[in-house]
Image 1 (cartoon, one colour):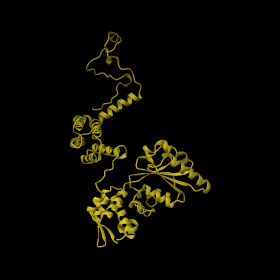
Image 2: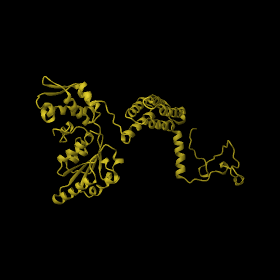
Image 3: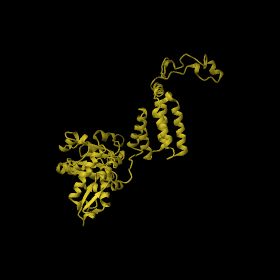
Image 4: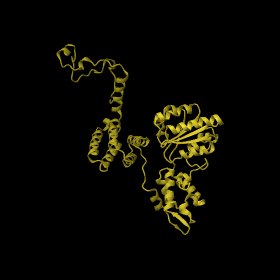
Length: 411
């Protein structure tokens, strides 16, 4: 344990020590009842880093009367999985003792690798608990997902991180040499986490308990002991957590959540919210061309003819982004976001085209009326192509089975 990171040393060993996820682990909540009754079912723990997924799995391992096997998808393969499954079969034959298989970062296994576990989950050879930071709807095989209950873990609040830090400092002070043998081997001191430092870590770690513990560990290592006290102030805490890291994976949920939030903020005509999500995407390294392409779509889909200038501005900003690039183009994108947010909204163009498209996809396509067909040859004219065509015809020019249909309902 001497070389283990502080986060590992401080990992809680019981439900009473576990902080966070009260929506599923609070008194009388379903997951707590499952764990306390030791009737473990196949489960998927889905949530952000540092929210307690692996910690809870290890608590289950401590409390359960089952065998517990740990498999890290990032460093394991099919061969490792087969060995665990064979061991689980043998254990059950000899002792009737079931095996819980915890797969950390299960989304790292591809679909064919995940298929390996399906028959053994189905026949009860192993009870699967998978942990993932990615949406299991997309990253876990549908048959495997249908046999497991998904529990959604949430980021820890600043208040919860604060409680974790308080508990951590208390444990450290009770056994200095266990947690920091190299710092306190010859020194006796008390760690004091000042309130400003506590608040800074709780704020900047963005709900990730591991980040909070890492910052505390670095602060203790780098602090100076004076008069028997090792004080961590706000400046040292901020230096320890370093530059704020914006979590954002271009190929995962954060990407889609952010663009969805931007889109919905524009629809709600809330420029402040829209600018926040724009900044969040740009500062995390999102491709500005992707953002403006989505904004261009918004201009035609959600504003349309209510303000036709919106589409013109959007295509102009698209050219600006190509010409300037980041960071110079950020103001142009912000200008477009503010304009789209404040512009009047109308989905009538999108609704009209969607209705027309639906009929084309789902209804019989009657022939195009002869009078509006192209007639470049005499033969075609003899067959009536283009006959009786009037430039400003008031009669419906729709196919016969759709005459009288209204897609555009402007008046």
